[in-house]
Image (cartoon, rainbow, N blue to C red; front, side):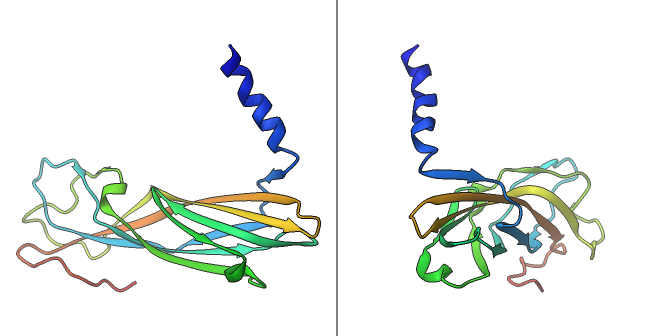
Length: 174
């Protein structure tokens, strides 16, 4: 029973230090479509593991009046990038580009896509929600009071199938 009471007490202690916000004007995010190339599989294959994904995220930053961005954390799965005040000073936007390892991505279910012997599909297969970008920004005012702002966006992924017998392409127009 005492463990049950600790969480509300801890939250009450932290609230005066940082105000939590989902203010849509303070932090917005745009995510570029990622691409991946797959090797053809068997006709009965329903689930695939994705390769590593290159992700590009653009965050628009606008702290409330009389405050400045102090830190920004961008994460996808277990891949994180942290930016401090030296990077955020006077910035209105920030571009984060990084690779998310394959082992951090959940398998996806596909149906009748990228089957051995089938004709190639130049359009690919677009998947939404394979991974999500999470952003957290801390702003500080002249009194050293902090506010925290959050944003998230699904990362669209377009899968392409390598033609039978050809090695996996190392670059795709992005």
